Length: 359
Ligand code: ADP
Image 1 (cartoon, rainbow, N blue to C red):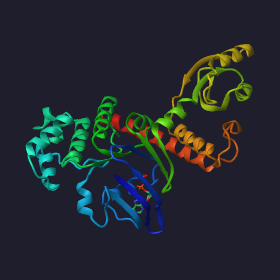
Image 2: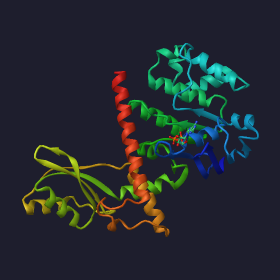
Image 3: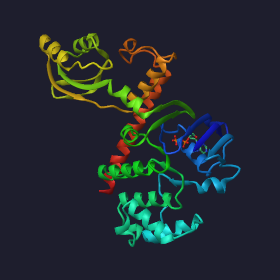
Image 4: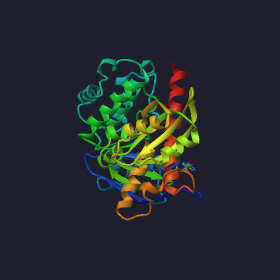
């Protein structure tokens, strides 16, 4: 349904997309993931016909977006990160306006009613958009993307700035749309990819570095475990003991404390549960374990898993056991993993700060 072939986009001497190719089948939901400046928006803007490419092709259902933009655009609904809403219109007026803009034909009222029902806007269709909460406005944004019943819907960071309940609602909506549409969304959140996408394409510095089924990635990730352990004891010795513990792939002292306890990040080999052994080891040495929590998975996990799986098919990366600490020269993949993680962390903080401001 969507085919991108050898797409290159240069901004002057800056290469934002460097020979990017991927395709999305009908009815598939694909997540485009990458750190800031990776080229996600550029790819989406080319795909939606907002930008032209330096070279390469973007096709929607066989129609080239550059050579036949009107036909191609008719097949696309787009929700940018900032939905293009007019606050002085009511929801209905706005959707009706979009209906005209897109040159739709047929029973306008029936079409808009169906959309409002699907995204649960019917109760507020007569309200001014300026009086809606951010969650409802996002639904209006999704609704405008659905006007004209496009085959493809593209979402740019659809849940940024929403509260947890709104995030779940919007994800459910997108999943529902995925049953009848082909969907691409850009996101920096693992939970989003897992909850919504069938496949994940990771892009970095304008190049695709991974393209995998979400299920495969989730399986790989769930087999690796990360913990934060709070331990009272001499830091050097504790760290040494952790690093030497069978089953520990990585151990690191974090720059934080909880009372007397130092905090360590631990990553275990795939499939191993070291919690009991850790408890016995520490108690044998007389060091108190005062906290042990799972850190969950993040973009770095995904990235490393993807890189690990590609290793199994014969490419570069060293095995996990050879990478016990972060000391030494980071590989390009590790640097990217860090960048993805830091980017996600930064955005989480920004989003929390933004929410605080709104409160
Ligand atoms: P992402 O959406 O992943 O954050 P972008 O597609 O916005 O990444 O940007 C990719 C690269 O292209 C970045 O290096 C960015 O600075 C550059 N870039 C994006 N838009 C422009 C522009 N209009 N002019 C020059 N450089 C740009």
